[in-house]
Image 1: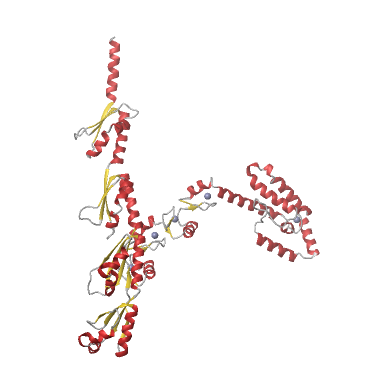
Image 2: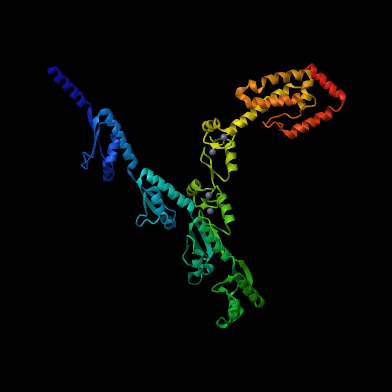
Length: 520
Ligand SMILES: [Zn+2]
Ligand SMILES: [Zn+2]
Ligand SMILES: [Zn+2]
Ligand SMILES: [Zn+2]
Ligand SMILES: [Zn+2]
């Protein structure tokens, strides 16, 4: 009895020695609350007799008690859970002017990512994302797509004299341009400047459509400067403006007569007509059209008469601005923004090896073929892989690759065989079966390539075998494809055969060739 008790005591002691407690500090109360959930506790302690308690006291936040080995295992599970579910906050900068557009898409991103997104107070161009790491990462990804693919902004310089025409009476024109489009159009300060900076922002498609509608409209207008000195000015204007009133009869033009030169603006036809009428009566020099709009480079604020010239300027890398390599027409004030766009742009072909972007599949193929990075294409189907091992792994199961390798092998074997034949037999000028030397060679080849003798390489053997048969029968064509109808290279093959025939046209030379063959 005493021995039994002693044994129990020892067992209990070893058990107690083995039992340990580990504590984990989890300061986030909501995370502690999640840890405490029954299903989570059960999951942490699965396959073990470990006890996990979650308290609110600083010292007893998370306690794991049990056998040392099991405790460590459970601790790792709890830590992994915390890592995955720890709340993360990320601030993201929004491109100037995009805030409204982005806010319109927050609901969708929220429901897709399950992260919490909001625009912080007084920080119009920032966005706050909250959630666990996975949710925040996903929300950020969705946001990047919104900012760099869905959203666009175009900056125009509109001739200040014509801003009124774009806005229209009581804003009617601008309203109709914006109607049914997700765009916002902002005009810069109305100053004395010749140009008014205009921002068109919104969805990429609508932005472009609104912009081209504005530009189309402006193309109907003209702005002309006239060299008019002060003595002439008085005459043209007349008493209380009576002369100019007569000149303008029936025309919808506007004249800035405050200084020399005058600026005349309005519908194209009307402006030209007024200038014509003035020039009939007065000798006035037309200094030229001023242009009605310019497109601003976001990188350097220089402006251009059309998008083509702007993109040319950007492509020359004259300033920090960059355009999309996918040639989708998007351009950005800096390389960083452009790269982010390219990461999502559907027009960009990406190299899996180095992540570089290309305008087309052909350019990407050229890059991979030149072995510019570690990416490699399958030698059969041409699909591109990150590196040589990945491509080779794919080739093992690629039908196209197997087919191509088979063709290469067939070509090689036939070439080897051809080289052992005399020129006449090679060209099919005589049957291989009528020339002693070639007869022996072809006999051996027939035996070697008989499909029954090559069960492992039956297809290659069959094609080579058929070629041997064809030469035996005096066919000028060497069969390569498994349909047996095509020669290795039909055109050059035929040409060679022709040349050969011309050279060996007479009986004598033919005979000498036969002799040559038997000597061989
Ligand atoms: Zn620029
Ligand atoms: Zn693009
Ligand atoms: Zn690459
Ligand atoms: Zn392949
Ligand atoms: Zn021969």
